[in-house]
Image 1 (cartoon, rainbow, N blue to C red):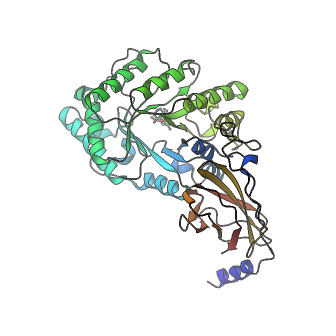
Image 2: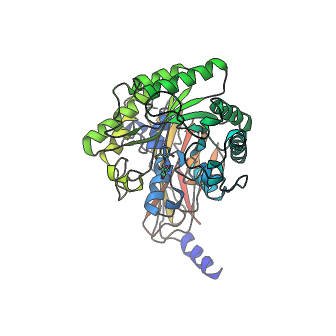
Image 3: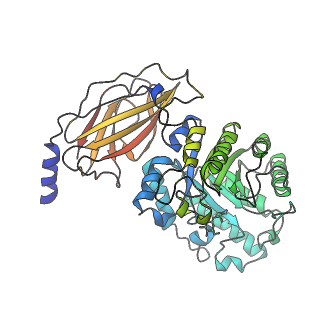
Amino acid sequence: MRRSRAILTVLTSGALAAGALTVLSPSAEAATTLGAAAAEKGRYFGTAVSLNRLSDSTYSTILNREFNMLTAENEMKIDALEPQQNQFNFTTADRLITRANEIGAQVRGHTLAWHSQQPGWMQSLSGTALRNAMKNHITQVMTHYKGKIHSWDVVNEAFDDSNGGRRDSNLQRTGNDWIEDAFKTARAADPAAKLCYNDYNTDNWSWAKTQGVYNMVKDFKARGVPIDCVGLQSHFNSGSPYPANYRTTLENFAALGVDVQITELDIEGSGATQATTYGNVVRDCLAVARCNGITVWGIRDTDSWRASGTPLLFDGNGNPKAAYTAVLSALGGGTSSPSPSNPGSVSPSVSVSPSQGTGACAATVSVNAWTGGFVATVTVKAGSAALGGWTTGVTLPTGAAVTSTWSATASGSTGAVSFTNVGYNGAVAAGASTSFGFQGTGNPPSGTLTCTAR
Ligand code: 9MR
């Protein structure tokens, strides 16, 4: 107690006299993260998360900064959540929900019914016992996460790789209606979650597997089986390259009346070739109104299930690759130019207000605005003393509201709103900075932003 009081004294009498506030003209700065840039396009940008890597600060920093949709790479699979029949273990997976809440991200659930990664007890079941176990798993897991999942991969990888028919599995052997049974069970458990069918090698419109999945979704829609989305995993490599007709595939699925999500994107390769393909995938998604989000299957190349193919957006040191720049640019983001898609829609100027700070920190905000909304990125800089925690405050214009916040906790959504550090970014060394962001509707903030050390 004594020690913390001493620290507090130093902080509140900190040497930094005034904190700078700079609100940049929105036309001078596009969104600088994948999530913010995608949000401006009405989409999300996500990543698979390996929960045991959250303690890696490079990994966590990129995760918190760049992504607004999270998928557990393995921790929400059947073997992880129901290791013994009807005994559920949500502890690890729940940490993903916590992190998502802390950074203002949403969560894709992956996956409820799959031939792979079944626990031993399920592998040994068949017939009605297996069908009932599948339905119980769906009900229990979706009830636990009710209201917390944006989209669920209800059924994963149920089609054969080459002939366009179903893959043989213990689930398939319970009867051809197991997939629709899974979707009906899912709808009853959490009516708010989008229900997806997810598969790989369904990117090339001319492949039999793509046609097989397409025909199933078409049949489901015709018969009223509840399905909201199709997930294209999109693992691209020399054996399954990005196809020239990818956009056609997205369009055709969307035309059935479902959303299309790119759920596990990775592209083996390097340099400009890889970057161009990543850009093409993003442009294809943006061209299809119902392609509502992209998830990459990991953060750094070294985090990938196919690490030797260097298929991701960050290198092993956490540095953004050319592929990252290509994706950000295709999303309309960047660091020096306005979003090319809405050059006329930004407000003409946002005033630069005089510096104001209280205590040992300063907050600087840059705003990227468009008609009806904005993304604000705030940098919190410690003065000559280290920070143990911080709170920044801003008054929003009338009619504006904060709709999501990442890497901070907001006190409210309208009027005078304060943002307090979350667990991992309260401590800031003397002279160092951290950042957080928020997205809002209405006009962006143009007044002063205060910073108080805690
Ligand atoms: O990336 C996942 C890897 O860590 C696991 O070992 C593997 C086990 O099945 O699953 C990987 O993720 C898969 C995803 O769940 C479904 N589509 C294919 C992905 C890559 O294999």
